[in-house]
Structures are given as C-alpha cells and as structure tokens.
Length: 603
Image (cartoon, rainbow, N blue to C red; front, top):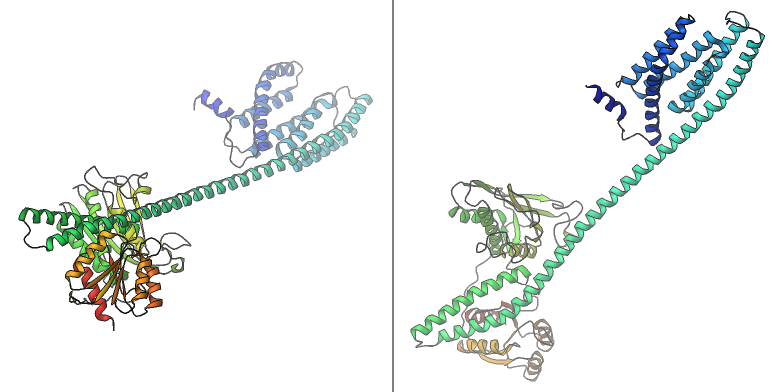
C-alpha cells in the first residue's frame, strides 16, 4: 500500500451498521488523539531530548521515546480493535503520569496525565472504566504518598514546602478527578444509551416503513388485478350484448337464405350466390359463438371427460403440422383425471395454446411440452382458491401446463394478454381472440388460466380446473327425431323478421303456427284460448318481460304446456322449467327437431 493510500485509509474510518452516533464519535476521537500525539509529540520530541541530555535526565529520553513509538504503533496498526487501541492509549497516559510524578514530583505534569487518563477512560470506554481509572489514580497517589513521607522516594530540593504542595495538589487532584471522571463517564454512558435507543427506534421505524411499503405494493397489485378483472367483465358484458344483437340480424340473414334455397327452380348463378351467403353467415355464426364464449354467454354442453384423453387428441392434431426441429413432449398420467367440461371447448383451448407455442418458436429448434398433474389445496395463492366459488376452497384440482421454449412475452404485455383483439404477433398472423376466448372458456368451467414468461426463454400457460369426483362416462348419442308434425305452436319473439322466418320454417314441416311479437299479448292469448296450443317457442330478451318470466306466467295458467327457449342468452339461465333450449342463430332442422323431441316426450 502506498503512503498516500495509507493516509487516506487512516482518515476514512468505516462506519459499521450497528454503530450509533456516539460510537462513531468515540472512534474518531481516538483516531485524532493518536494522530495529535504522533504529530505534536514528534515536534516536542527533539527539544525534550536536547534538554534531557543537558540536564542528564536519561530516563525522560526513554519515556518520551517509548511513548511516541507506542503512539505510532497504535495509529498505524489497523488490525487492532477500538477497545485494544483505547487501552493502549490509556496505558500511555497512566504510565506517563506515574513516571513523571516519580521523577519530577509535584512540579511536573504527572497530575495532568493521570487526570487525562481518568477522563479519557470515561469518554472512550464509559462509566465503569472511569470509576476503575479513578480508583487506580487514588491507589497510585496513596502509594506515592507513603513512599514520599517515609523518605523512600525523594526529589531534589525536597522540603516542607514541596511536601505541602504535594499534599495540596494530591487532595485537589483526587477531588477534581472524582468529579470530572465520574460525571464524564456517566454522561457519555447515558448519551450512548440514548443513541442506541434512538438507533433501535430508527431501525423499528425503518422496518415499519418497509412493511408499509410492501403492504402498499401488495395493495397496488391487488387493485390492478381487480381493475383487470372488472375490465374483462365489462368487455365481456359489452361483447355479450353485441353478440345478442348481431345474432338477431344473423338469424334473419341465414333464415331467409335457407328459405330461398328451399325454393325449386332457382337459377344456377342465384343459387350459387345464396350458397355463398349461407356459407359466410355460418362463418359469422362461428365468430359470434367465439364472442359469446369470451363473454360467457355461450351455452356449454358439459359432461364428464378424462382431461388426459382430450390432451392426447390435441397432441395428435398438433403433431401433424409440427415443424422439423421442434420436439413434442407429453407428461400425462395413465390414471383417468375426470373433469366436468364441454369437451369441444377444452379441446379448443388446448389446441390454441399448442398452436401459439409452435408459432412462438418460429420454426426454430425447441421443445413444446404438455403436462398434466393432479393437486389438492390452493394452487395459485396461499390461503385462497383459484376457483370462482369461494366454497370450493381446498378442493381437488387438475393442473395442465403448456410450455414452449420460444421467444417469450414482454413483461409489459402479460397483463393484457387475455384481452380481446390484443396480440403480440405480426399483422396478419393473429386476430387477438384466441387467448381471450380461452380465458372465457376456462372461466366458464370454474377454472383459472395464468401465464409465466421470460423474454427469450419461452412461456408457460397454466390451467387449473376443478377435478370431478366421478369416473368418466360416455354420454348417450341422441336419436334423430322425425321433423314433421301437425300440432299448433305459439311463437313469441320481438323481432318481426325472425317471427316470419320461423313461421315459414315450421309451416313447411306441417305445424300450425300462431305468432306474437309482444309477450303480454301472447299471455292474454293463452288465457283466452288455453286448449288450442300444444307448445310455446319464446325468445329470452324481450321488452317488458323476459322469456323466463313468460314461462313462469304460463305455468300458472297452463302448467302442462311445454315451453322451448330460443335465444342468444341461454347460458345465464339454469335451464330449469324449459323443456328445450336452442341458441340463436338456429336453422330450420334444429328448430323443428327440438320441437318434435319435446312434443314426443310430452304426455
């Protein structure tokens, strides 16, 4: 180490985290005391040596040399602790005082060095060391006094006056030493205690502030999650309303197209145009179903399925178009894991996640994995359940992970990942509806879907679904009913166009159809002519009265009259009370088939 760095190290004393302000003051005071002794002692050393040689005080030369050398050792030895350096400095003060008293008597500076020894003991080390130093001074003076008055210790020019001076100085020194050293030590000790208490208070305040900051951050995170949930709910409600209104328009387009196609002798170009219109309408119907799925207004046909079997089917589909260089890994238990779900929709979610994973690797080498594992408890957060119904906390669940080693997702994009029409893909490569629809499907199954991703390392989508307590079973395939009939039907819908279309459909199948665009008018008609109608077909969303309310009113008048619901808002109902449910837009065969099925079951 160069001399410059040594000097810098001496002046830049480290401050430890546990040190109080008084501790730092003591460290600096000790350093400057040693530095002062080294500097001023060096200045006074040469004159002291000169006069000691002149007057033959050789013992003074030895004392000064040893004291100065010891001061330099304490100053430059950075390995010594504060406590050891303090004891070393105090030893110098004490020995100087004793030696000067022995050699020079009361005329020397021995009393001053002993007083400095006692005061600095209290300042540097505290109250108890101050008392100890005072006791050492008292014993030292007592021993010297005995030696003086027994003539075992004599000074030059010693006479009665010198003895009197010794006595007066000794007594005054003891009094001053007791007052100064004890009060200084007591004061410094109390200041040190107060500083420690203040430091503990600051540390407690710091911990409290850190706790509050952490709590505020958690509150902000929860607020952001609540805002995101409310935003998704609002978007879902808006999408559901738009889908319902568009369904009515689409039903009219598909209905009139289908009626036109049923006509005979249609010119070939016109028939081709009608077929294209019908095909475009069916594609639009698929988009509406996706919107309804996102908004949770789409009906689900739930039954018990093995999630492992659905996942294996999806993997087979994904394997067909898998680019070279991408490994497909599966970890699916052999034991069936039953869920109550719409198989088609769960299939749609898994295929969407697998497709996104393949696209994320962008034809590069990588790994796409699908794993399934059962669990029990709270998979997402401690003390809470991932499922919507709080009563399901701690239930058994199934976790499905779809993981890729692709490009990953930016952290700022993750909160918006499940929003409709938000996409991280290039223009033309994504609609932004896939994950939004998947989110809606999983929510409709009382589950949760989350994502973890690191840019450049890949992404992992985690699905948690409630595990069903029963084993998987196959749903029976319904028999195809006869579509023709001769019964009298009451058709209730506030859309005149849909009333006209359904009337033409049902008339072609042999039914007698009476129509109403007002639910109150339909109810009055049923009260006036209760015996002529065999079945009622009603919409759900109508001015003044919903389809469910109309059904309840009909039940009071004609409890045996079957009612079929035909609407775009069927998922909001539990289906109880209705003998049949159809989702708009509905074609003629589905409408006639459902009516025939209900009539055949009615006694």
